[in-house]
Image (cartoon, rainbow, N blue to C red):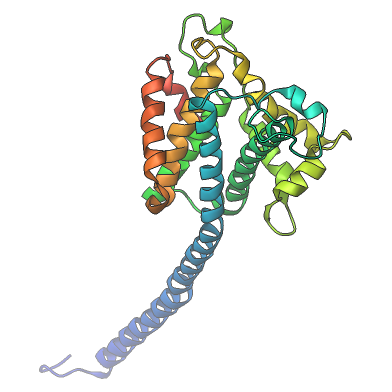
Length: 291
């Protein structure tokens, strides 16, 4: 540079610098377009896919939870409960013979429908796990709350150390372990429809007298409530009663989490009653945070 003017060397240097800046800008633009924009679209599509699956399974899971909780409320608070006897499965009366809750056909229906509601809940929970859990990181607050409620219900069935009484080993109890819950659910899933089999199919296929793996898993679910009514109401040393109260408490909370509009005054009152009844038990609540 001489006298304030640019010579040809300076011009070449500026041209090269401009070319480098232009090239870098083009590359940066390409990276932003091809990487970040594409990644943004992929994340948006993943969220949409997750939402569609969530909406598809949310209502059936709510209904399954409502059905199960209503029946558990009946078992926990309405007396007498005379439909949980295993002996009811040994005969198959064709119809009701008397218009009474003591009718054999009616009691057998109540037993099989209770078993169906329990197994169907496991099935919808397993479908949700298969289709949603691996699509979502669970970091959103709503999803995290949902997973917590689901975990507490699973824990109510599975965790042996929920009973904090010093003489816990003398209590009547029965567990449905977490992997067993999944296996029971899998037994009721219609893979082609990605849905849960209906009550009729359940009775024909899973309660048939022919041996099968499906029958085995249903039998595990049946043991959870079998002959529960044989224990006197004032004898609290059957911890399955406490588990029923926990299922009511956490089941109602799950319904509230998924859709507050489905939370009736009856369910709210039942949750309050369950929480009050649980005061009579020593519950190791720390066990319920485990996965």
